[in-house]
Image (cartoon, rainbow, N blue to C red; front, side):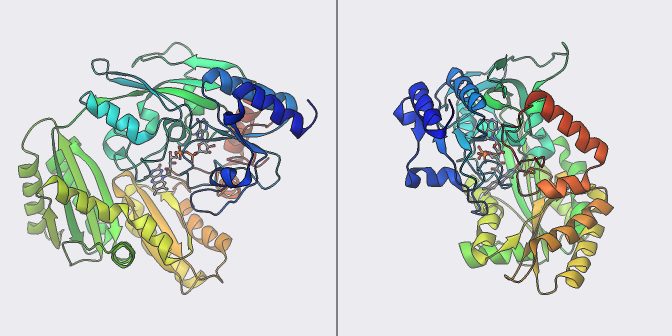
Length: 462
Ligand SMILES: Cc1cc2nc3c(=O)[nH]c(=O)nc-3n(C[C@H](O)[C@H](O)[C@H](O)COP(=O)(O)OP(=O)(O)OC[C@H]3O[C@@H](n4cnc5c(N)ncnc54)[C@H](O)[C@@H]3O)c2cc1C
């Protein structure tokens, strides 16, 4: 095989005509990322329908020396799932491998194919009375393979951990086209290296995830959702400590929302908080199999007012009201996008450093990028903030990244708490991780993908 036409012919023979997309209008949704920051130009999109077909595609592309870009729901926020503009890369979409293979209510596991939509997997778990706790605003489009490859976080990390903590088994097609089947359902397995960990969060650069076994949890029967306002992030941290004391490990979400975020939501999504006071808002959700959640939340709110930590607050009276409170948080990203161009940061710093980080980053931006507006919201309970800077066209994104990330680094934080590196942060990773860590990463990449054909230019510079 020595040219693109031969490769396309070979791929069509392997997958059938429906399995290979070459027409420009049909390719378009696969070629550009969700934020439309990275428009790419693939040779074609391939849509295998089994792990064996994925392996055949990978082998064919390896033999032709053609790079592959794995793609799930294409909701990633780091430009990791789209090809470059060279016209030489093939997008490998997993969207035809979408089945939930089984749900085991006793063993508390779910096995699903990589292209299975996260919401479909959540619903399958719920139908068996179990909880798949990975939950994020893109869950109606994001896939199991994408969530695993990105090690997605979301709103329940505080209680259940990142995706990594829920993965029991993986099946992966390696860059040489062999299939590594580790679809085990074991909670304890110390037999040798735990190789699946390499692929979780590798953003499609080390292998193609074709199926996963995820851990399920008992489905809480009672939950309570509250929105509180506070004067500043220090008070939000005091509230977190109080909530942990009063609600213990039943807190599943502790989200911080700035007044700026809520103003954007009101402007673009016509949603208003039911409480008015305060510069900062905290959305808390707690859930348990046992009754008494509402009483516990009321006691927590009472203490928060008594100690003058919270200014105002409301506890949802019904599931519908809880959904309305969550809608405020879930519309922030979309409302910000409607407002205009922003330079996004998905950072984590040690929890207790958050108030100082916010002051210092704000001061650094005021000095280095005057006229910008900061929109802060995120998973405060995890020390993870979305620190987005709304900019006029004249502002230089690289300079803004540098300002924010230098403050993050000064506090021992991470430049990517959950969205990953993709192509968006590839230069920044090399700047903020030590040479030893970067060299280890390059050795792992070379060991698994010596020809650099799997998602080149993502995570590591070529
Ligand atoms: C509105 C919105 C809210 C979001 N909220 C959150 C949030 O709270 N927390 C969070 O962590 N993320 C969040 N995200 C980001 C995104 O939804 C997650 O990263 C999600 O895991 C991506 O899944 P996907 O199927 O869309 O993957 P894609 O975007 O298709 O791919 C993501 C990365 O994984 C690779 N990949 C995809 N499938 C495979 C596979 N089968 N094998 C190997 N590699 C693969 C791609 O090459 C790419 O590098 C949000 C996105 C949006 C649009």
